[in-house]
Amino acid sequence: MRWNNSAMRLLLSVSTFCFACLLMIAQSPPSAPQGTTGTATQPTAPSPSAPANPVPAEKPLLILIDAAHGGTDAGALLTPTAVEKDITLNVARRLKQELNTRGIQVQLLRDGDWTLSADQRATTANTGDAALYISVHASSLGSGIRLFTAMLPAGGDNNGPFLDWDTAQAAALERSKAIQAQLVSAIQQTRFPVRALMAPLRPLNNIKSPAIAIEISPTTGDAAQVASTGYQQMICSAVGNALASLAQSLRTNTGSRP
Amino acid sequence: MNSRLFFVLTCCLCVIALAMSFYMWQLRNRAVDNSIPSGTPEVIAAPSNATQKQITLWVAHDDTATLKSQSVSIASSAERQREAEDIFRSLLEIYTAKGSPHPLPAGAALRNVYFVDRGLVVIDVNSNFASGQTSGILAEELTLSSLVQTLSANIQGISQVKFLVDGKEASTLAGHADLSNIYETSQVASFARQLSAP
Image (cartoon, rainbow over all chains, first blue to last red; front, side):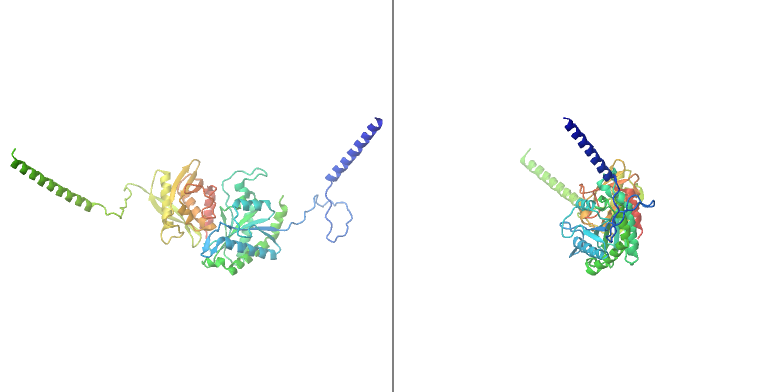
């Protein structure tokens, strides 16, 4: 009986000690990342000027490109042989190539002739980690490139982490507008006609991260121009350059997100 | 009464009946000549005592992708609903006319306008209006902002607008502009300002 009591006390003491050790390990700050050279670094006392938390490693910049329409939704009929869903897919693929060559990662939300609802597109965008969502459209009306941000409808309030679906873009709208303005400024330097507007366009208002829509239209008044490879390439090059010039700003924004 | 007298009276009555029939036939022909020819409906003029009201239409122009204001006069009405319908019809006359700056098909029409409490207006258009619309973000936005801006500029107290197509909710106008939500007139006004500057 006495032996049993001593054993129980010993076991309790050891358990308490182990628990205390575990707590200390859990509350201690993480160790600093090792240098890129791979050599072991000597632990040193933190200097008074050093930040309490180390700077997180820079995340790779990811842009989500969404070719609008697709599948049963053909979109606008620009010419008797050119439908919007095909043009948007071609432009999205070209834009992806342009951005990849500039070191920016791109994910295509639609990479085939699939039917996707606005809700499905928004859900994919909201569950991913893209710094910017771009919806690609094509039209026969107007001239050049138009960049749209969301025109938010009258909707419910966003309460803490719970966002109202119809106005989920509200928190990121100012950021979207800033990106739109920077893109317009960069594209204008190429003397390509470009215009900044807002639009009641889904799924822009359902996306919680910065989101814009690009609508390309002919500069000659002939809708067939939008379907031509050369024109699409010219637009993608201009937009790709503009996005690359914002890369640092977009990357910073990604890093600051919770 | 002998048979001779009966025969004379009968003949007289027959003559009178024939004469009256001929007269009636003449009257009928005269009435047909004076009637309006079929196939050409007569336009009924507005009552001369109806007052005219000057309104501002916000007309979409596809060539410049802008909204431009245009003044027209319509018959003034005490009823808001009647006035809103007249305003829309003025706008649709421009869009469905030959050489329109923002073409809509001839069958495009307004079905109804409903004024709901707290400044909400429901605009019900027919399916031709939606299906005949040029598809595109800007093209559809020009149509909707033209309607909303024209209505809110001419009728006081409208803060929100909801669109229906053939009396039912529609997800988009022609594949782009969202119709599932309610439009705030203040937002459309700021968008109209953007569109007014080419």
